[in-house]
Image (cartoon, rainbow, N blue to C red; front, side, top):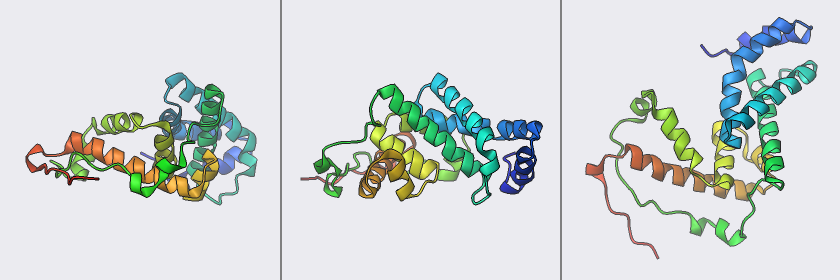
Amino acid sequence: MTATPDDDRDVVRRAQAGDFSAFETLVARHERRLFTTALRIVRQTHDAEEVVQQTFVSAIEHIGGFREEASFATWIGRIATNHALALLRKRSRRTVPLAEDQSRDEYSDLPHPEFIAEWAETPDEIAARRETRQLLDKALDELDDKYRLVFVLRDVEGLSTEETAAALAISVSNVKVRLMRARLMLRERLTRLFGDEATRVEPHAHE
C-alpha cells in the first residue's frame, strides 16, 4: 500500500532526529517509485539505479532542511529528477537535447492524428490490465527525448510548466508546445494499441 503524506511525516521527523532505521523505512517506501521516475528520464537501468543511490545520499544529507512545505514524496521526487537530468547531461556531454529550430515549435506544425478510432475498452478497464503499464512505458520510450522529458516532468512527475522550463533550460512556451506534441503523439500510439478497428474513421486531408 502506498504511504500517505501523514504516514511519512512521523517517519521523516524521526529520521531528522537521527533515527537511521526511520530513513531506511523511507527508502523502502519510495525506492521503487524513484527508480521508475529515473528510468523514464535516463532510459538505462544501471543509470536509473545510480540516480536512486544519489537521490538517497542527497536526501540523508539534506533531510534536516526538509520543512514539509510539500510532501516528502514530492520533495524526494524533485531530487531524483534533478539527479536524473544531471546524469543525462553528463552522459550526453551537452545540454539535454531539447533545442531545435524554432519554426518547428509552432502550433501550426503539430502532428495530425492518422489513426482515429474509439477505444475498445474504457480507460479504467485498460488501466486495470497488468500489461498496460508496460505498453504505456513503451509508447513513452518511443518519443524523442525533447518531448518525452517534458511529458515525464509535467504530466508524470507533476512539475509546473515553469518548473519544467527551468529544469530543462527551455522557455515556458516551448514546454507548452512540446507537451502538446507529446500528448498528441502518445494519443496516436495508444489509439493504435487500444483502438477498436471497427470504429476507425479516416482522418481529414491536411494541407
